[in-house]
Amino acid sequence: MTNTKDKEAKGGEEDESEPRWRIGDRVYALWAGNNCYYVSTIAEVSEADRTVVVTWDDADTSHRRVSFDQVMRPSDETTAWSRARIEKRATVRHTKQKGRCLFTNEACEPGQVVFVERPLLVALPAVAPKLWECLQKLHEEPGDIDVIRDKYVPEPDEEPNEDVIRILKALQDAELDGESNKICKLEAKSFQRLVSAWRYNSFGHHKEDGLVLYNRISMCAHSCDPTCCWSYGDEDAFVLRSRMALEKGGELTISYLQDEDLLKSTSVRQQKLQNWKFTCMCPRCSLKVDVGRGIRCQRCKVGVLYPQVPTGGFETCKVCGSSPSSEDTQMLLNMEEEYVARVDSLDKKDLDDVQTVYQAALDIFERHWILYVMDTILWEGQRQKNIMEAMEHQRRRIDFHQHYYFRPTFILAWCHEELGDCMVQQFPSRKWHLMQEFQRAYRMLAILCGTTHQYTASPYNKLWQVSSTNNSANANGANTETSESRKPVAQVSISM
Ligand SMILES: [Zn+2]
Ligand SMILES: [Zn+2]
Image (cartoon, rainbow, N blue to C red):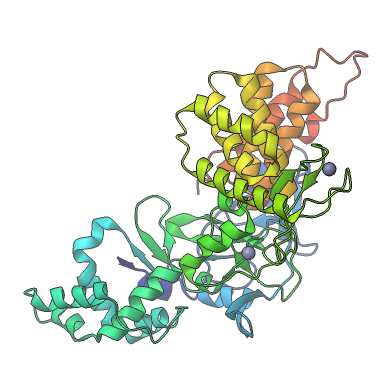
């Protein structure tokens, strides 16, 4: 466990005001040709019109004058902000339905960094032997323990469970020195409270099998349509970005579920969220019809019926106008349940079996999340063997994602990039198509992790490559290139 409090104290009073640029500063600046940030050096500063002239690292000579607000320190998007700066950006407020939640103090553009927060504590397995020592130290500092005690737990007055009692007992039996002995004095109930605070508020460490706890981030409520997304910055910093346009005062929410679970039905999501012991009331969970559970109309075999959540019945078929009888409804729901269990137990390596289940399911379902799950298995399994077949599954994954949850996610962005990769191999002359796939991937990743992130640079550079190749299929020979407005994104990190 690493206590990051010392760093907080040192870095706490960093400059809050706008940085003052000086000639020779190494910066990221926005190149107006494509609105991407590139590494450059400041050559001139004009305070009067609040612009700088930069020298691009790739020696490009266009768009060299950049306004102050389009220049950033290389670390601005990845290094943790001071607590004061975060508090200026986001406020914790009490809400009637969900308790304390986090709100933005400023309107945000899609993809804008809301704030970057350093972890409060990091618990990694390597430091496990020292865990108790650290816990004990932690308890010596009233400030820290209060911050953890302050976190959300479903039952603040929870009785200590067996594990907690056992751990405390073991600690009492162990031969601890005088200092470490203090932890044993901790009451079982307070210990339970701390354990629960970790359980309900920490994030899995992104590189190791450990846990990370953040202060402000832990105030972010869950939504199955979260307003924010996040990536990791330097030293486990949590980079929070707005996923959509946010008004001033808008709520900052994240998803406690993984992207792939956001594509599962409302009831499955609700079930998974029971891990945090609350019932999600987000806009998607409040919809009256779940369009992620489409069933083919049994009458006309063309229309798609979706279940109505409150009644449990199905909507009327929009193609033939019939609605299933209550008997048929029950039969369809039972069948759905069987398939969900069947898909859940599929062996991903047994592609023939997956193929058989998929084939049979297509007769019954359409626009159903279990088809998406099988499309994913089949895309991954067929990719090296039968690329044309794999591409079709990838297209279906994209279709379903857009139909059910059309927001930028890493899944959707990478689906487009991977499809673009396949297209380059199979249909290199379909330039418009290739460009479209890479462009979608690039635009989405720019929102999810910023234009300077290596994830974003990858489809961007592919896009640039495709756009700068000569298109022999261009019949009239006219130059439709717009390559002067594109250049690759540097993947090298900035050197100071
Ligand atoms: Zn929800
Ligand atoms: Zn029908």
